[in-house]
Amino acid sequence: MGMQSTERAVEAPAVTRPSRAKGYASFWKGVSHSKMLLLMCLPAIVFFLVFAYGPMPGAYIAFTNFNYRDGIFGSPFVGMKNFEFLIKSGQLWLLTKNTVLYNLAFIVIGNVLQIGLAIMLNEIRSKYFKKVSQALMFLPYFVSVVLIGVIAFNLLNYDTGAVNALILETGGNPLKIYSMAGLWPFIIIIAHLWQSTGYGSIVYFAAIMGLDDSMFEAAAIDGASAWQRIRYIILPSLKPTFIILLLFALGGIMRGNFGLFWNLVGNNAQLYQTTDIIETSVYRMLVSQNNFTTSTAVGLYQSLFGFVLVMTVNWIVRRINPDYALF
Image (cartoon, rainbow, N blue to C red; front, top):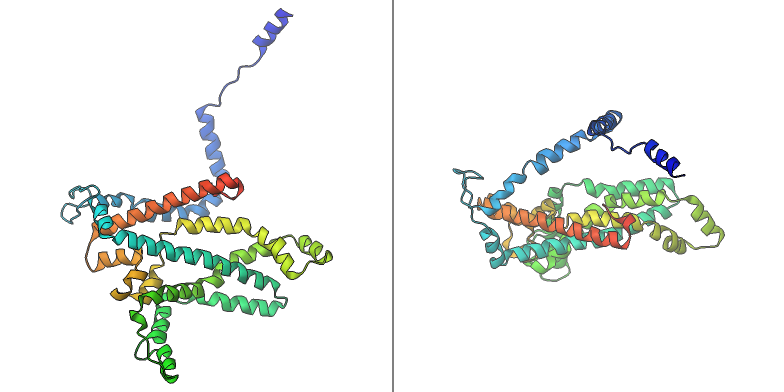
């Protein structure tokens, strides 16, 4: 028995790891099989390489006293002084607060309205009316923010605005809306929701249309009402879609809608306390003050804050339910 076991042990083939050459061959074989998919992804890859990874060395400006003569890497290194200035002046806190609060309002209210809109579209039985409703709801998304700013000015202008004209007709006193900082968060949120809600409901509507019809048929046989179908079938089925979209939105929570804010508010310093966000502040630093160092410091802070937030939220979601995490 001992001799037989020894012979078997000797005869057993040795386990060898695949060579690096075979690994490379397998990799290039996979590339060859997926070449059409990779070719389709090539424009996106080039885009991110040129516009996302290529400018990254420029972040070094945030730690220098930049001047054109010495260039990016030749300018005097000042460490964290640019960030210290922003923190001590209170400007960084104001910009962060405004940007985050606006985006939280956009995310929470926007997603609730988008889900509600998608459910209402799903409950419409007339195909013609459904198509017309979809077209009308998608239309605001394609309206330029410049035009939205013009519409807002014609409505809210003190001298000739439609709102003040209506107030005068009813015997009231006209309002200086462009001097009322506390009113503008509501105006901006309403303008953003009007423009984006219809288009944003597409994803939720597609998720609803992808649900199994047998669930609705079984619910109808059991006598479930429309509200019960929505509560117990549609809303739970939209949970994964909502969480994924929420994670994507949180990744850009420090990215403001520059076009909308700039065209509605512009250079009105009376409204900065409640309407100034990171993008508008950086734009003013570059255009009016020619300040590259401070604006780069703000931009770097913005990117790091968003990165940490996404990683944290994704970690929390992965701990609760790994199926809903991005990675």
